[in-house]
Length: 336
Image 1 (cartoon, one colour):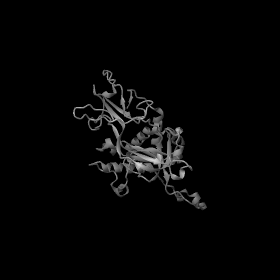
Image 2 (cartoon, rainbow, N blue to C red):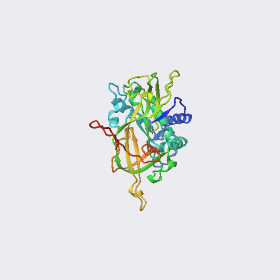
Image 3 (cartoon, rainbow, N blue to C red):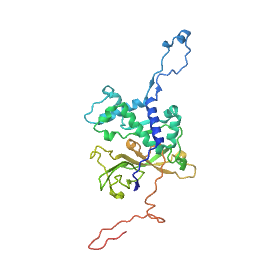
Image 4 (tube, rainbow, N blue to C red):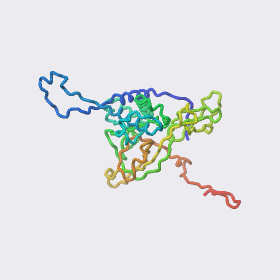
């Protein structure tokens, strides 16, 4: 696993993106009764603005936040719901902490914001999640007092409807870290497993906690204790806090559901005489178990490159699996 030091750096660009993304969620609106045909008004109607119909607007992300809040409060025991009269409308909403954002909405509202998110999505995705958390807490303060708030405050942003959908063959190094949409056919799915996204560790010598350690696609631990009196510099002396209810004053470790999909390029996109190409797609949180083998899907996310640890086990040699045999009859164990 990797290790991180004890210094924290602030990302000014990320904070600006978080503020502007929060403003977008709060202020974006769509007309719901815009006239479809052009009508030439009479002179009296033109001079009397009160007779002209006013265009009403809806706030899609405010309404979606109400659905998320209703879902969360329905999952929390002994909590009074905010919108009892909207029970039939929100009862079948399947998502509790995933906010779906239409990329074309962002383009029409703030082109600069949409462009920077598309270019630096891997870097800015944590700030988008923080913006959604602030958005939900401002609209629905009752969520903060929920008994399951420690589990429901981890929000995720699902962007969709990008202008272009790429085939698998067009994913190159220039797409690493950028927001992209690809189309493919699911050929295999894995079991749903837990994944550590952000870890909180406790020093085994002095007991001081190191919170909010992001996992860089592998198990990442601190290497230095932040206590100036503690001389702990061994990553193995930091213990992961798994139970969030042991110390309610600190930030718990964040786990999410994880599933790997094997995706193959569509048959219509394979050049003549070529073999179909495949890649692994990682689904997290509430996106797991949404696709099955044979489905043709559009995946929106970022391309990352993860080194193959088994291939790098021995430099210059092919990786081999070894099995230790248990000793029998007083004999010595060996390797097969």
